[in-house]
Image 1 (cartoon, rainbow, N blue to C red):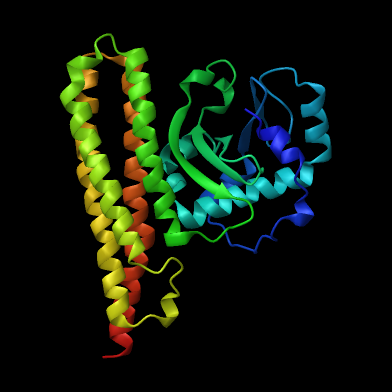
Image 2 (tube, rainbow, N blue to C red):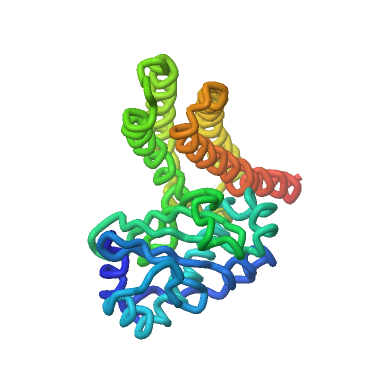
Length: 299
């Protein structure tokens, strides 16, 4: 965990300027109450909205970072919220729990490269009064991937999410070996899920290769809008089949009281559900609106 060391090397003046954005009440309140989780060496530091460390005594490197990089941290939080607002439905899908927790959201950063620009972020929500006393009771609400130097995402970010689904299955297998008393008992489920993931990955990559990476919706014809909408819907169908298989596996694990492992399957299903909802709401939903509006204007 070297997120703090990577961020220390960044200067906010060298990062792309953030464009002004109108937030709804949900995103605005989460921005005010966003807690960061950043690693340095073996320690994951829980950092409050006012940039104090809550869970342990920080070392000199962390203290200096928090004192000198407040502008960078402000930028980082707003960058995260803008990405959540445009490229995910993570906050929307968990808005009930987030509101119940007074909009407290934790953003746990994991570096995805050694250049301090790409990160995977896992998001949780937690009851504020019990954040430190019952930290393990936090609720997982999703994950996102950001590149601090490239806000605009190819294929609306779908490729990164599909790759993540495949990678997560490999990690799920590792955890099964460690957390299940008899992993072979569930061999057929793992095999079915693996086959579904491979099909989803292969077909989705082929579909994405046939689509414009950065579509300008204002310049597309009605026929092009319909085709792009149909292709993204096909990706959704593969994900729905995969999600249903994972859901069946999760139910069995709960019935078998595999409490040490089932929570990882639940997180995996949450990511699939978020991705399906993102496709339905912010990709197919927007494209369908454009198609209807296009037909209306040209009727």
